[in-house]
Length: 99
Image (cartoon, rainbow, N blue to C red; front, side):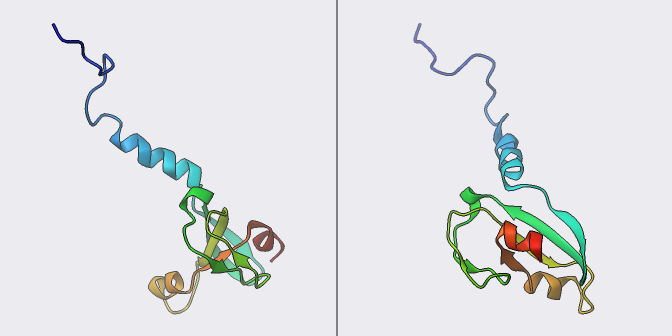
């Protein structure tokens, strides 16, 4: 009888959802923060998910691809949720803390 290379107890497709959950844990959780200028939605971006270069509005320096950072957008904007999402900005974590 031929030998099976598949581990016993493994069901095809049983771990497909686990990869997304692991990526979500690595990327961090979306949260709401209150700052001097209002309510903000903040979502961390893991280094493995950061594929583009951005300019941090806090220090005007580049956030290179592959560097962990935060994405923040207004949570209480007057123009609506769609406009708030379009106006989101990528921040260095340190710059966001001292904002």
